[in-house]
Length: 252
Image 1: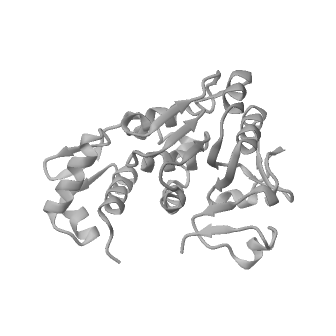
Image 2 (image 1 turned 90 degrees about the vertical axis):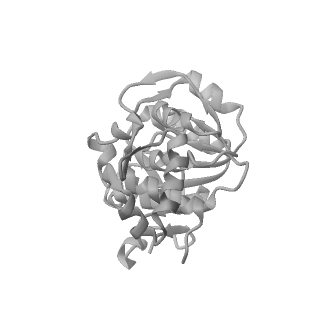
Image 3 (image 1 turned 60 degrees about the vertical axis):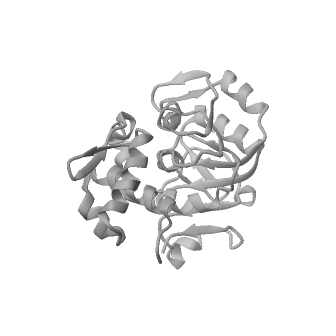
């Protein structure tokens, strides 16, 4: 199926994020279009300060993309990008959304740079910096800075969230218990619970490596979730661990 211009630019960004540098010719072959078409796409991405165009190739320009290749953020990167691309189809125009501090959600933030109609709230400093190149309205909660997650937590953050009316929240997790998704950090726990309370829909984004993990704290029950996004279809054995009515979106 032929890609739209918007879809192609998102996939070009995907290629550059994952490979670091890609040639114009390779991109043209990858998406079955002319090199002139790719150059036009690249120019638009360069105007947003997302990629840098060199002689015959493109590479990353945003330092926050480069910071991603730390230990946690680089794990299962391809899977996280696959999830992020799937999620894009579920974000309506002019929505107010919340992005939490997970590395899967960070990949979604990178693709949302291409949107210009959203109100995006986050307590992640890194996500706010990535989105600074977009034309969306970006709201950073502020609060007590937590170095480990590069995010804001605590009472100040909770007060900011308490006045919100969020259409969709996009939340990561560390694992699963019998009752719902889990997290290891108490500081992140209270933020997730507050966001869920003020959001009409709640989506979990996580790769399938989390299926074997169980964090200390549960922050939402399965019956309060609208959907879980993973990068592949679950096996029958994996699916049996979850309620039958729980909706998964899995890329083929």
